[in-house]
Image (tube, rainbow, N blue to C red):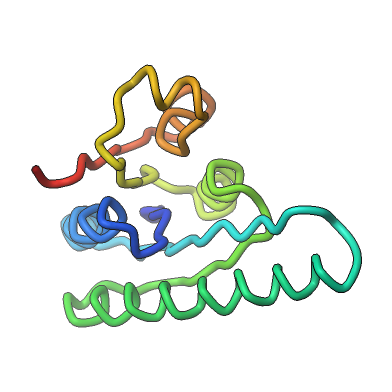
Length: 138
């Protein structure tokens, strides 16, 4: 078993990281840190450059999360996945037999999330793995 966290260094993700570390530590399970890096398009030089930039941003973001988890004594695995965030998290959760997926929210209204297709909204409706949605601090 494991805990999967979607992490991108947004304010919601930073708070979700703290919660995911607590859950991982409480259950003695590793934390799988996931960055969904879906570049637009599928071929060509521009696509490759965009994908490479997304992967670099993901490595930097996840590096900070690994440091925080290791300070708390939580083992980590890092995955940068070429997919949209919700799809990346659902797939990672299945592969790692996740207890839950932890994701931060931006404090947006439920209607806005439904209309724009936010990652937490998609996960709550599509994931077979339980989802822990951590609200941003007020």
